[in-house]
Image (cartoon, rainbow, N blue to C red; front, side, top):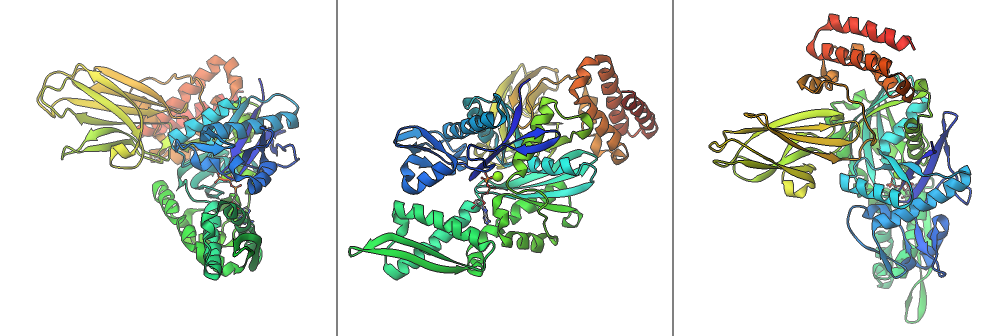
Length: 574
Ligand SMILES: Nc1ncnc2c1ncn2[C@@H]1O[C@H](COP(=O)(O)OP(=O)(O)OP(=O)(O)O)[C@@H](O)[C@H]1O
Ligand SMILES: [Mg+2]
């Protein structure tokens, strides 16, 4: 089976990694560097250029070069490069193809499978576009993994036995993500994710650009913001200055020949202190608070229960970030992972798990959440269309939930079930995922007949939606791919009844904590590919695990203890 690599396709920079001898290794590009600017351009000869070369070209020929493509993913916007238009997915595909090329050179083998990370806060449409880009680049995209989850996996691999609540704070070039995880005995459980798709280092650069342009206008009466060539230089210098101010108390920006007045060239010369810069960008830092609040309240964890805060993303090098976090959460963050590599490293760990190249004992088990709510279009008491949420955001997946609705017209014989993802009460503002019709509803007055809609979001990232007419048992349904998780066949031996739904919520049982280690061990063992050759053992294990969860949710603790014994014997027997 061919190698799977992990890729962090960032707004500003892209990294790739692979797991070798149980450790993630960064894949170096043609320049021998692990970090590649996410910049693509067309050269004078018509060929594509990437990375540092493209970034340099951007200064001279912005019209032939594109930066920060990731911010446009999912917008449907067309991007002009060298006189041709491209979609964000096409440009991302070019970047990924470049990664594929240098990875093949570095590893000296063909590379056709990848795990690609995306911000946790990307919606389904944006995820689909990244998959499309990966496929266009020639990869089979084995899984889309959330960036903060990947960062946590990179940390988790090195701290397998730790038990803690970890907050991952990822402020990159274009996006902000925050995720709360619980780690215990090699199990990583994502509790909640939130973020802001439009907040990153780029916004700090823009603040500085505006400030520099204002100073210039005040001195010379010329608006640089209207001058494309000046803007390119300003952007470059603003970013340099920002980075400088992460370690120095002041910075002098000098750009010669940035404009002309009365035939005379004008230079921009400004000095800015770190303090001034922090004032200018204070409002951006404050914007990180809301996602932090969402994650804490959705996961039901108090700031005091957080054991560590890990910083990821280049923008967390700004000292004000750590200071702000400490002020807001009462705890200093740590730099326990490499902020540039952690996401790619974690994607590589996931890649190795998918490839089956990690020993069971060295492997991490991970559960994730869907950061968006899932629901159906419904009509409220006042006859207004609304989003009726069935699976709220930040519920651990896999999960099964259902809701019952009634008909809203006399003699209604069919019902259309429309499925949406998103947080708005106004269903039209959410992202449409799919629909189907259920027919054969017996005649009755409005509100008499009931339809139960069940959502089951399984480990394959598939959302199964099934509607049942309560009075007749008639069913109809649809399956929607949500790409959050690995797309693979699952062997589903669980009985298909209400119990099956309940056991998935075993963690809510009062005694769950006592049994979770053995449950996780069994789940981890079941993920081991080697079990394919031991089908009977596998079934025994699955059954005992299922019975244990069932006993737990039913509150039969004595039975659960017996089953725990049985499971331990099974686990120890191989
Ligand atoms: N020393 C530093 N001080 C301040 N900012 C920095 C520093 N080093 C890098 N940055 C900023 O970090 C950002 C890039 O970070 P990173 O490479 O983590 O982002 P990304 O992964 O490309 O983006 P995203 O995760 O948002 O898609 C840029 O805005 C860059 O200016
Ligand atoms: Mg990033």
